[in-house]
Image (cartoon, rainbow, N blue to C red):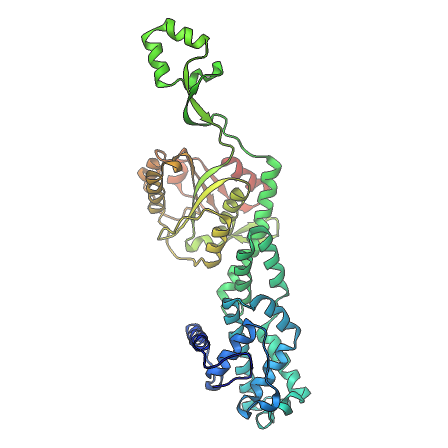
Amino acid sequence: MSGVLINVDYEEELTRLRIRELLGYIRRLGFPFRQEVLQGEILADSFYVHYRKPLLKNPNNVGQEHAIWYTLISTYVSSDMYRDIASLSQYNYSMSRRAALKILRAYNSILARIERRASNAVRDAANKNASQLMNDERFRNEIGNILRFYMGTTKSIEKTQRTVSVRFGSSVGKEAAELLFDVDIDPYRARLAKMLESLVEITKTVEDIIVEEGSHVERRGIAMGIKRMSNIKEIQDASITSKAVYSASRELFAYKLATKSLSVRERHVERRNKIYMLIDKSGSMFYSINDVFSMDTVQKITWAAAIAIAIARTGGKIMVRFFDQAIHPPLQTPRDIIRALLRVIPLGGTDINSAILTAISDASRNASLRSYKLLLITDGEDDMVNPEVVRSSRKFFRDVKAILIGGSNPIIEGLVPTIKISEMSQDAIRAVLSHI
């Protein structure tokens, strides 16, 4: 087995592993390929031409069976599109595999056009060797057109990767680039790409509004321990010992009060929002609401995720669980939320009861969560909400609130403070932030 690259060992076990993995990837996606395309050396070349800087054989040393493949690879490697794609794919296994699939589709198309004798440029290609094809300007132009169709452009991908990397980290930027590179392979990814674009814009808008309004400070604070009283106003936080002194001897209590020697509960003023968020990701949350900023529509789940990310990025502490018919693992950073969103699959059905019960279970096992506010974000499309489940959540969290996006739910609205959102606007964002 030998391909057209001189810096690939086609008999190496790792190369064989790459071939098997790429073949499995192709079969999972279900693309039909001619048998010539799925030869081991072709699969190896398609991966390694993207994974590392390729070194091509001399065309005179290429056999007739690989002449067309060699001309395709040579034309591709010398193009601007290759330089753009290689900047994303080199030493990136996932991106190299995706790019390999695209170059294989281009090769498959060229072979089909040659077989059909689709144009004068390809009519005699099957009878020429690599050197002859390399000197055939019409054939190489035909290849260039096919490459542009299948490989696409990466200019917008690079821009998005830079933007996402700056805001959320290089690893998330890399995942975003992989997502955008696949939109023509997997149509569902085009939908996720639109969600990502909206998410970046919304988070910026939300964060600007938070900065404009300033941070919210808990006035009373949270009891953290016992200290000696330093201010007469702290009498409202008298410790059990101080209360016992009051009951036993008013004179002693008065003396201790005058000398500020009473013990009181020490309160820590929490300057950050601490929020446990349950975000509905059922199928209905992938419907859209109006976005007055872009004069377009934005999906409900994107809007909900943007609020969570903005709170976290402005210093708030969050725990986020997506839910539908099942409850998904907890997330605590903007990076984790975006990664989850880029992999999210809309499922039918919403189980709000199970989501709240999971939050209660988390808080019962982790006492620190009891100082969090519970925020439920959903469109309310669940007719089986149990009032007792909603009421019981109040025992485990400092506060319980709900945001209904583009929908309603009489039980939720009747039991907890609720804000209803029908469009994405600055007023809506301010309403949510003040509600939280």
